Image 1: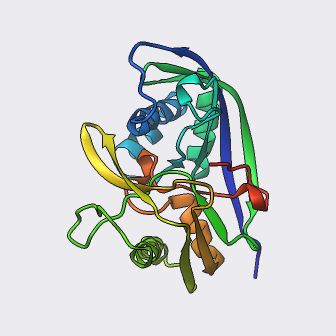
Image 2 (image 1 turned 135 degrees about the vertical axis):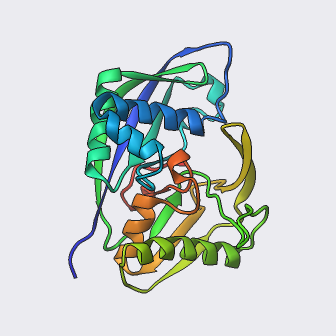
Amino acid sequence: MGFFYYNRLKINFEILKKGDNLNFYDYHYPLYSSILKCIEIINPSLSEEIHSGNIKRAFIYSNIIFNKKNIKKANKAHIYITSAHKEVLFSIIKGLNLTKQIKINDIIYSIKNIKNEIYELKKITKFNILSPIILRNKDGTTLNEITKEDFEEKVKESIKRITNKLKLSGEFDIRYLGKKLRPKLFNIKGTNIRAFEATSSKDTIEIRGSDLAKIVALYFGIGDKTNFGFGMLGIPKTIGGTDNV
């Protein structure tokens, strides 16, 4: 069997200015818009293709991870971004390097540096939950509560939908290693949507079996609305990653 690699960007910020309209929480759609603008600077037609929905799951990104527990006192932060599409990832890098900063909810984040991280996935089976996960019932409504067993089943279904669409084969199993995911409402363009978020770095998802399942989960995310900053998995610090959430 060949080697499978995962590539993502770590964007390190310095927080330059905090305006009067501070909101450190409902930033998912504004951050999506900022990333899309970076792509638009470099490739307007690609940006339009993504925004119109013609490129599904074009990119995914993590929560904003601040350097202080009291985030109102934070002066540094970082996010992770990845994409299965090279053109999208290159456009994000070039756009960020040109803009030098992004503004989200009256907070200006200055780009300190962009680091490219590459991981060989063969021996990695456990993954952090870097952003909330939106899961739905069969009727399309979002779940309000979920058991450990149902969560594992829904995550597996989410990955299988993509592997089937891409015509990828390989058996795999999902195990949730954590106490309990916390349900929380998030505002997306004026609509409140419930998602499940991790409460510590010990909340991990284990993917055993097909390495293709790991690739799909990492590049395309878990659950719905991944373009808007939901469903990203990461590499735990304990096994060589840089995640500490």
